Image (cartoon, rainbow, N blue to C red; front, side, top):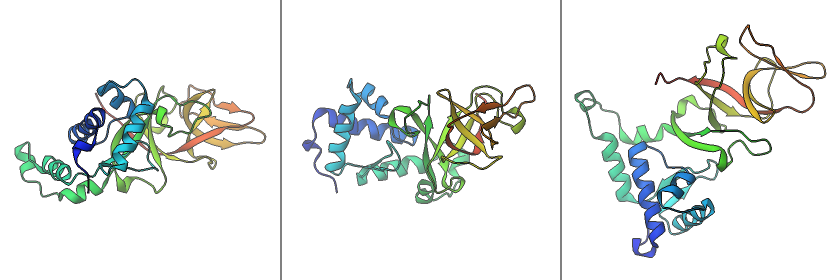
Length: 231
C-alpha cells in the first residue's frame, strides 16, 4: 500500500515517473546512471538515497540479490503494465492467448556487464550497463550475467565477436569448463585447464595460442549459453 504522492519531493516524483516509463517501454528498470541523467542529478549516491526513500515509503521494492532490480508496488501501475503487455499491436498478436501473469513470472532481468575491473565484484553497480530479459527456465539457481565477447578466440565453439555469453557466477571451475576469467584486468572467455604449476586458458581458434597463467587466476563464472543479434 503506497502513500500519497504528495509525500514525495520533486526529484522523488521525477524518479518514480521515470522508473514507470522505462519499465513500461522497455520491460525492465533503468540503471542508476540512466536515472541520474534523466532527472539531472550529478551524483549516483543521490539517486540511491532517493530510491531508498521511495522504498521506505512503499512505492518500490528492490531485490538485494540483483543490483538495481526494482519493482513498482503501485497497483494501478501493475494494471497499466499488464494492459500494455496484453494489448495486441498486430493481427498476429491479436490471436495470442498467453497469460499475462505467467509471462511476467517466467522472465528474469539479467545484468549486462561492461568493462570488468580487477578487485571489484562482478555484479558491482558500477559495472552493470543494462539488463536483458531472459526466460527463467534457461537460468540456473545462481546469479547470472551477460558479457559481450570481443575477438575471435572462441569461433570453433560457435562464439563470435559481438556475441553475448550467458554466465553463471562462480569462482572455481573443472578442467574443460568454458569460463570467463580475469587476465591482466580484462575479462576473457576460454576453456579452463589446471596444469602442473600453472593454469592454461585454451582458445577455440586454431590460429591462437593458449594463455598461460602462473600464480593466482580469478574466475568470474562458467559460460552456460550464448546470444547473438544480427543487427
